[in-house]
Image 1 (cartoon, rainbow, N blue to C red):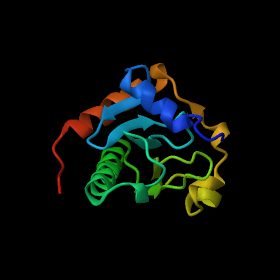
Image 2 (image 1 turned 90 degrees about the vertical axis):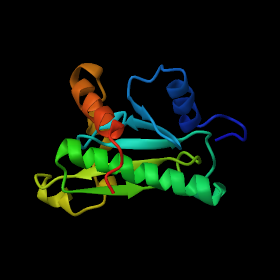
Image 3 (image 1 turned 120 degrees about the vertical axis):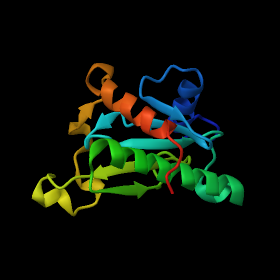
Length: 152
């Protein structure tokens, strides 16, 4: 990426701010919850910080705590709505060098070879592309789950 060029994360945050991202689940204290562009596992979502920063370590302790709490809240919502057995969380930033966190639901009925593998073992490009017509109900349920006060 060229120095100063906006990352995909920057572009997604701008779209969320403008209300132009159909994958937008909710505005959270630390940023934006969005469904993944490809639903390789139903309910795959991301948390994007606002403002965008290079990494978790670039945040002060209050902002860092807020981001991590929002991440757990998003995971709770995905668990509640999808019936997943667990959530895998990932923050890498290697391809897109801006903080963003993946929320990846895991299911009992995943193919045996993938059930215990890391999520990057999946062919993400083969995942179903996000579609408001197909994923609108999931989006609404996640939005509703996040409107409830934190349970713990």
